[in-house]
Length: 472
Image (cartoon, rainbow, N blue to C red; front, side, top):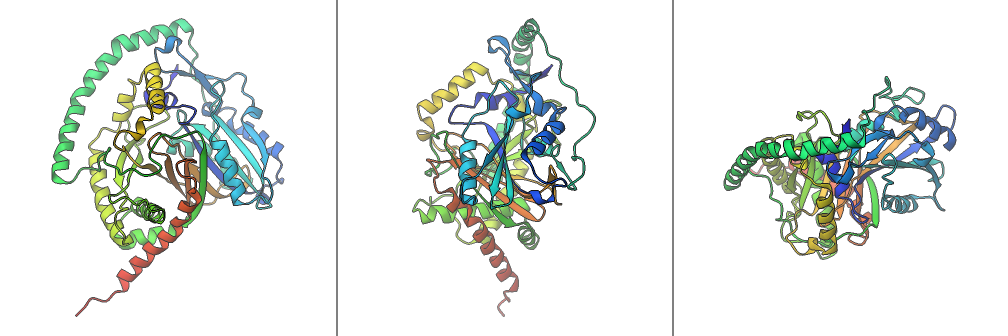
């Protein structure tokens, strides 16, 4: 039986018409590399062939009676590729504005839970001869790393090669009957969960004690509920705005090497500079730094075998209160080292362990009450936004034979934090995808266009420091 983990199921319980819990991707393709030329019908048929034996693409949810336990995955025996891969054409003139407007509209539509939780739109007519693919997969199915792995079923190293992940037929979990589901749920609630809770109490108490000690010595990660309030920290709607941009991965690596920092440090520093510039131009720059939640993959450290999501998170200040870009990077690098040390002291499975106690009915009612009462606007801000850095391919990839020119990842937004910034490296580029609640941040393109300028300013500051001669 393929039961959802508590963390996977939590993304189902968190979802409302305004707070949609799918992750998206916008892929720009050059169809001229396709061996037999482009046609939607052939692309759709090839996608069908490649996903037909992959459970993540062909399984659907089945609820446990009375909501007594997390749902299970079962095979969709009526799987139909035409319900998942659709065809669209951009309106004239078919440029960037038309593409991101359409992507924002698609991102604001919920997935049908009676089917496998993913969809793709093949969008023709982008900049004349290009094709774009907009994809959605529910967060209950993937995290950043597993999502990238699933894409490998659709990509290859050469235009006419087999996909990277094509292998032997995969097995589906056994589908239990109603009586078995009920009995397992009762046993889990009555016997297993109380014992699990007792086992978690001691390490959790010890973690709190260690965190207090770190806070006293100034080596703890930034604390939640300490973020300043901005215009994108409130109750969100279901409308989405999307913007994308490219920055140089080589420049990021040069800065990393010259300053002894990490790629993630540089990305966060650039994001902090872009947000500072954006808010300052609007007259909304807070005196204290914005606080970001940064998802962290624990796939290598996790002891759990099941579950699609193997993530934890740390909190990071973005240095939006620091004007000098190099000073911001240096300060952020030190803070990030403390945050990583602090995070490593936390069990890799802590979030997954506690998520097992998310009760379907109670969790869902709580989320709806939180949104309906607009509580995100009444308590201290937990965090300002989510920022993710997803490693991508260092070499060219081909999607159904079409070369991938750009791959922009887009994560979910939440009540209280209506902005998500995700970056992905791809063959020498860093692709920046920003998605926001349209009412909270309507001019999202203004923000994303500040990323290249901030990277250039940081690179210039590093060069100036290297060439400056010491005073004698």
